[in-house]
Amino acid sequence: MNSLPLLLTGMLLFLFSRISGDKQRAAPEADIIGQIKTVHIVPRVLMDSLPAEISESSGMLWWNGLIWTLNDSGGEPELYGINLQMKKIVQRIRVEKADNHDWESLAQDDRFIYIGDFGNNGGWRKDLCVYKIPKNRMDRDSVVRVTAEKISFYYPEQKSFISIPLSTRWDGEAMICLRDTLYLFTKDWKWEETQLYALSPESDARPARLIDSFYVRGLVTGATLSPDKKTMVLSGYESFYPYLWIFFNYPGSHFFNGDVVRVRYPEYHLAQTEGITFLNNDTILVSAEYSKIPGRIYAFSLEKILAEAKMK
Image (cartoon, rainbow, N blue to C red):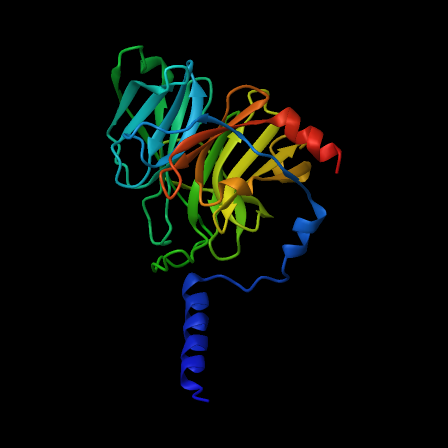
């Protein structure tokens, strides 16, 4: 047997691990999945086809009676407001002084909407940021122009910025806002976990602060917080089988320290689920990009999910 290909492969894997600056994981965590309640829920299709203008719905939130979403890398620097009854775009917010390098997430508090420009599937970006736009500048006109404030940040644990597509630990597509803090959840292509970072929504460049991590056995693509702040949900997929992680009964902002339920809906295999938001304290909406399955919005009942979990 020719050992040269095996030797070269081993050398490449070693170099990639050195380049990424990551230490080896101390112990596999795959067995944690077996300890968590998993339920199978078939969601309701709320919108069977998103408007063609929204081909890559990557973030979503409910505000002012509309579903707001955006396109990711290369899209216009715009937010699109969808009327769920009319099932069409009725308002656009043009975000000025902002570039859409790779917009991936939306979050909000009482005064601001936050746009996460931190998609980074090659791990090379040094210009990660969140755009902050004031709600009081957004009137009911069909097209609104709003100037953004830029919050630049970086992950202090990242030591290398050499591009290794779909192998980095420093991609990101998920964000929520709780009180005076933004919480970012990484999309970890290497270890299939998510790291939780805290970020103050200020305008000067600053490091994000690592708080915790959680093994999801997949890729986290979205996050949302219920209006009553009692439930945090992550969306994502494993080999394009979509899932939700439901976190509740947690103390303060320690989301991973409470109860957890995993939701699978394999009927929609290949749905590239990205955006997620609560419509109210019970209804969870998930958007999917156009892929081999049409771009859609799915609806889940939190009450039904938790009821199913209690029967496990």
